[in-house]
Length: 316
Image (spheres, one colour):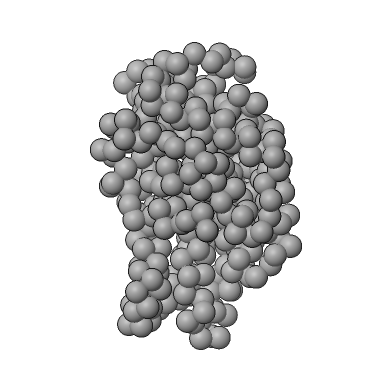
């Protein structure tokens, strides 16, 4: 992996498959599969999987920035190391929560020990840093969905409500009134791609807030709705999307070389159309996004960037 591209074989893909196993076991009420998947979850927990990964504090102490702070696409991005370990933690906890009711007290205890360790080393520190961002919004709602996953596992409604309030404040700070996302929507030749990435996370937050019986503030809802409507602008004509000048000037963490372009919806946002309908009532014209239609099927069975498959959700 480098600053521009991330290899997903060792973390993202296994995490997606883990979610799919848990979801299938529950949806089909398959007792043997429930048992097998639960054992896998406990084995992952007992092995303290990825806990040897450097923390955000350790990464920051060593210096260095993604893109080397100067649009160097080949530069190593140390931040990705911790970010993806954190993201794995959120995905793991969501999968585990699906099977929690079928676990023994001992199995729950062992996973809780692992969950607490993930939260202490990765999930909490990452969100503390990321939710204060002023110029970007990315996967797992800048880490907020990881915290929501931990709150759900711990049955901590106060933590969930506090986290949602902080995510809403983050969205308010970085989503502009016309729907563009500061920094994210303007990341060079991948600006539209990253815009869909950030919008996907914001839509997930609105949908999850509803499940926690938390009302999304009206002005936040409107900003995210505008961001979602811009998806259709970019699908129809990406030049129209890029016509909006960057209020901050040239980004340091982007490529401006057309060979690196991604003029389509982010392929990992496999359920963005369903989320858009559920969360803000917008129909996203994915049928007109040829590259998304070609690339997104390989990203199933779950969206690693938000921790679940939105295609399994309904408005009710």
